[in-house]
Length: 133
Image (cartoon, rainbow, N blue to C red; front, side, top):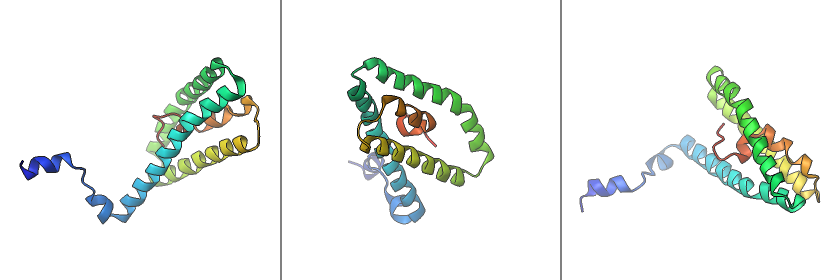
């Protein structure tokens, strides 16, 4: 087999070895995506355990859709108007705060289900799989 064809099939990890800033970005995105996936599974499950209602889980989806519709347009304008590094840092800190809020609610015992809805509304990127800062 030709080395050129084989090279196209293998992922190039050269930038990870050569560029420390890219390595940090990649590692940060890995942690962010892992946490988002865990939250995607845990939050609807927790709401279902607390309420026993699939309608309450559907309500979570409606809250996330409302947040996506309300924040998508202003978010795009902000991304164009501000420095992207600072905006990325600010959104990651906000998403971490939302995750800490969800964690505090979960560790605090049996939270009221209504308390779980505002946190993902304020940080739709925490739960929504397509949410990107």
